[in-house]
Length: 273
Image 1 (cartoon, rainbow, N blue to C red):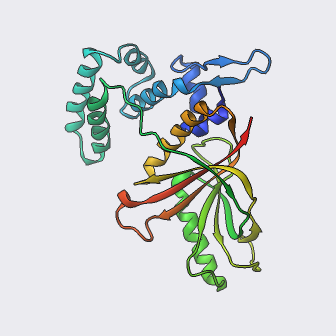
Image 2 (image 1 turned 180 degrees about the vertical axis):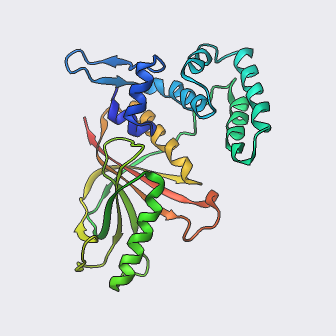
């Protein structure tokens, strides 16, 4: 079982939305702790949550989602999606994303597929000397602007960095958030350096056990890796999440034109239960 904050991070759905789905009887917690009142979720609830998100994203209301969930299998839902497909095809170019989602759903609805599962390895992470820039940014999509700001500040201060730079982002929130995301972007240095605010020099914490996996392709694939970790943790009951998670972009917009060839390493700190 996962606490609501853990389930939020693993599914990349905010706590606010999970509570909203609970209040509207779309996704009730698997259990509620009778003493603490904590909502507890299970990995078996992820497929239902994915259906809710899909239906929400294509314009279904709460009441329509409830009906669809009760009639997911069979001709009813297939007919509903075909009608929605015809409607989307009449819309302007900005509606093409909805069309793609519906086509994907029609292809997989009878199989009731779960997204690709990622393989995780456990490794130790050393402490690194880094120059970092930490800010609360509007949302995760603004992380690129944070990297741009860090790059410009380093250029202005004329700091000498290793030829082959190692860079990673640290996410300080304990949940997936829709707004006001606490992110720190870091560049590893060869030695200690003096910097002025808003830059900081520090040593990152060494991590004894870090679950790691590689995500190939566009950044949209990253959320599936977090969902896969939920299955991994369920299958490896001796571990649970702790601390902050990191992302290392080995190939991205600065060295790869095709998003299909991006390579991102996801790292989530673990501890033994």
